[in-house]
Structures are given as C-alpha cells and as structure tokens.
Image (cartoon, rainbow, N blue to C red):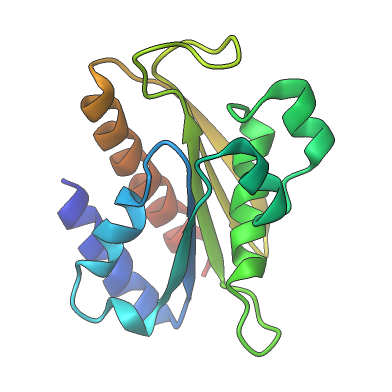
Length: 164
C-alpha cells in the first residue's frame, strides 16, 4: 500500500510542480524511503531529516524547546512544527519546500513521556498552514512504524491534492 501511495504522491507532485520534504522520528526514514523508491522522485523530493532524538527536533527542525520540555516529543503541535520546520530546512534559493510531512510517536515496546505505545501524530504543512492527525495504532513495533508510514503518505496525498 505504501508503494502505491508513494507513486501517486510523486506523480501528483510532478504534475503540479510541488516539492516535498520529510521529517521523521518513529518512522526513522521509512516515509522518505517510500517516496524516493519511485522513479522520478528526484524531481520533487527535496530531502528528509530523521530527528529521532528529541533535542534534534529543536536544533534541526526548529520545534519550540518549551513545547518539547512541557509536552515531550509525542504531541500534535510537535508534529505540525516538525512539518513546518522541514519545509524551511529544505529551502532552495530561499524557497521552502511546498509541502512538509512529519511523524512522531511511540512505536514501543515501552511508553514514552507518559504516552502509550501506538500513539502517533502525523503533521503536514504547506503555505496554507499546518495540521496534525492523531492515530492510535496497534501491533508490534514494526507494525506501528509501517502503519505510521502509510498514514503519513495518506495525509500528504490528501493535502497535496487539496492545496495545489
């Protein structure tokens, strides 16, 4: 399913001249790997950042340090700020990526910062603004990461087709 979604995203982004940047935590690069596995992805995918450690969400992506200290990394606002931050981080000639997508959550096996295993937030950002989607996923660590990847691709495709 992720392969199909990625192909649709790349095709749509190419048709619309839209660029994409990815910020990942629990998915550890699976989202951007799905996108770049599609032939022609280099025309629209600017890059990805794996900010697995919480401090990197601030230092690389500009997520508010006070928000991270107060809420931890698994938070809807963190997901939105990661998506906004990666758009800016992927700027070329002072032009941010048209779309940013981000994942943050708890893949397990243990809870994190008081958040349960399977709680995931996907953030998507464009010039029109940012939004987040909350997910409560089930299964083992691998299943949660795969489902979060699919959810991120679905969210990106939805915003891409709605906002370009």
